[in-house]
Length: 73
Image (cartoon, rainbow, N blue to C red; front, top):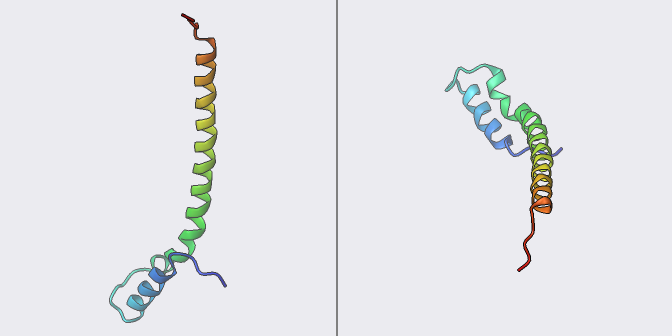
């Protein structure tokens, strides 16, 4: 089983919950486990949107420069 990057945080929160240092809900204690499954897809979507918008911006700039009147001296 592959452990996520937030697994050590989960272990810390679990220990704190079991020794009654925090009185949080189990949803918050286990949030590092399921938050990983939410963060990764969001980051991938943002990366894809960024690449598409960056490519679109470069295309617009290239078209503007292509139609810009050239002056050869």
